[in-house]
Image (cartoon, rainbow, N blue to C red):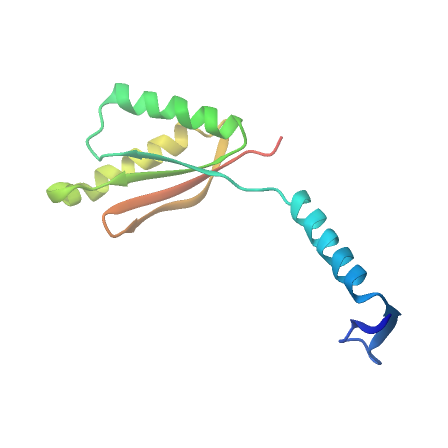
Length: 128
């Protein structure tokens, strides 16, 4: 049996006479239980170029719909390779079209932003 400080921030601090090993075990058990109840956020990525064809665009759109319906967040980004960086406006238009097509299953969490060679946008699923 040892004297264990339960809450050091209280005024006056709270202490308890107990078995220290048992106290540590119970704390770890509580932390593990809280961790298991947390909801894990999974982010799926979809990548395409600024000059994507309509069929490829629709194919990636279907994948995004499946991800959002499953409850995952979707990170959509346009990757500018080499000299395609001059098509920034086309990339932004494609991302906004993508968001508009997914309005019924998801909402835009973060609008398109250019970061280096990528223009990134996040879409979160709608609450059920």
